[in-house]
Amino acid sequence: MANVNPLSNPKGVKLQCELCRSPAHIQCRGCKVTYYCNVEHQQADWTSIHEKICQLLIPVRTPVPFLNSAAERSHSMEQLLQRKKHLIELTTKEAQKLLYEGRHVDVIPAATHSLSFSVDVYGLASVELVPVYLILAEANIGLGHLTQAEEYLSHAYWTVLKTTDCSNSLKSKLHRNLGLLYSAKGEFEESLRHLSNDVYFASTVSGPSHINTSGGFFHMANIFFRQNKMDIADSLYSEVTDIWHTHLSRLVEGQIQESLRSGPVWLDDADQESLDDNQEAEALQILSAIYDIREQVPKKEPTKMAKTLHALTMLYFLSRDFNKASEWGKKLLQITEQLPKDDQSDDITILIDNIAKKLNTKQNS
Image (cartoon, rainbow, N blue to C red):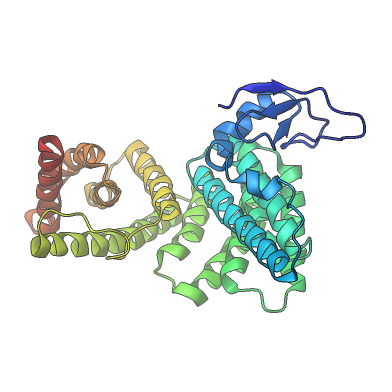
């Protein structure tokens, strides 16, 4: 973390804390354009996002020198706008990733940066603010701060309502967050209504069997699980597992087939369809939760356990964490021994062999 730099503020200069907007007394030594009210807020911001954007903030927050020509001024303003948009993209992506990882406290600073830049670039009434409102709402739900979450969702809801051309993808995310809020409040019927809307809107964009739709099914399953409606919950967990298993199988097959053609070279994302960081984090969150639930039930079902383990093994293989892939692969092989011969897949054997090859290559390099 950049060292603490105490300030003695000049008269008339009001410096505000990056996180809470209280009067600031500490300056980041790295960028010298970010201020905090105390060391705790500086540490929280650094852990969340500031380490990644420290130097990027300098040209955005440093006063622009006077330029003589209109063309120079226009070019300077366009550069500034592009830098701010880049910061919005970077901070939003990081906040979403932290959210999927369950690091709700760390989400807040990153999302706060994103919201601040989004307001600056697009204005308070813009639909461009909705994604970050939703991230802040979900993080606050995770922290149990339901009043704050409700406030963010209210802003998001009214913005969407007033936007005639709002995408169904954004409506899906809004209803998912409303579903999570009502679930946290114990209002399960209202929660299921919103989650059904989430699935509907996501399906119109990607189809009912797409990974973008699976999150709605997953959260619905969690509600039925909490209500002890185990048959419905189990059916939905199976649906979610099938969606991810199908998607991951296709990606793994493509990666393995290309390796056979071009040798032991891992393809870059530009060369082949792959999971992005947020999809990876979401898949890990969902599949790990389903595995834990399957593991805890008194009567374990080997076929369902095997499919979840297979999906997790493929996920770690695709994320290039071959040690983790090997660990989960061993669990997968153990459970497949309990399956009838007809249910044992050649795909599993091929996957395990490829994990072993990748580990050997890694160890010998």
